[in-house]
Image 1 (tube, one colour):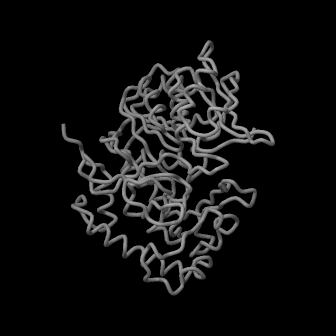
Image 2 (image 1 turned 60 degrees about the vertical axis):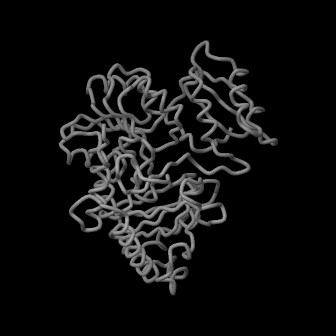
Image 3 (image 1 turned 135 degrees about the vertical axis):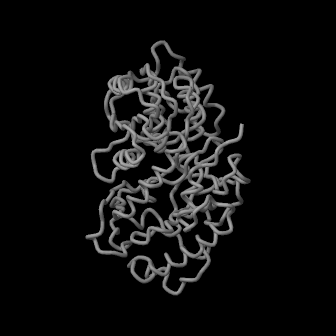
Length: 409
């Protein structure tokens, strides 16, 4: 059976001013170069931060432009803006990973939020027929929040939408799902698993987003909700929407009409397609708060070759946060732990002067012994096999931290 091409093809063609789906990459890459040139010129003229970095480099190739770092955003959002503060619709504050300094602050105009809403609307049509019932397990109480944007996007498709459930008992969320009977459920992977454990209703499609999604966790959700599962990668810095799987489930098709994506080595050099490195983004069409060669801190790779669905859009696969000597990447350990049936939840951190690794595990009653878990972790190199394993009573209260980062014990 042939796969239907991702609906993002036609949407991306519209970004280019074309009325038909993309026929190839030549027109798209020419558009990206032109948009990059215009973005750099605007930023060099109107953004206080980029004026000092980019003036005189307006025509430079992408790889010769300087990087932007998360620390640049800490307390300096006004230095990125190229418009008046009165045009800002929403300001989002994010903690800067590994820093005790001021948090990152990001500004979004009404046009920025509308662009994300449109990306959501088009992407959701891949598995959400008009008029469907959809449950969204993200917060939607603030205008411009992820849940609110999804509700608005789905409303344009004539869908009935329930938004919320963050921080509540999974049994209460499951009861609402059972009563609402949604065709599609959207949420963070771990939240989806917690609800799927206790819900009677089985949706036809699931969209996971917002946290690491290793294959073992995907398989656990699929055993409970055997409908089709889609993965989405997004980050707040680009307005949440960025890369969405199609029916081939071989990486997320990128939002190439609005975001330019690179993958670079630790030294900042481009890596070959298929190689892992740090995801770097440039917001091609968000000139009011430009991010140029922004180093996300996420580990990913651009998947080589064409997608089986036939789309010319590039595809991105993301594992999680890049590791360091003090805090190695958690993707591999998450894959192992989610593969242990009796583990319901876990936390990873360091403790004490020796900075030993600690794993807090919420287990099913009568579950496997710590020795069996230690044996599974022995597949990893380094100190994981010597980690202190602490079974803890559960379930733990909400809200729960993302699995992408280490915690403090």
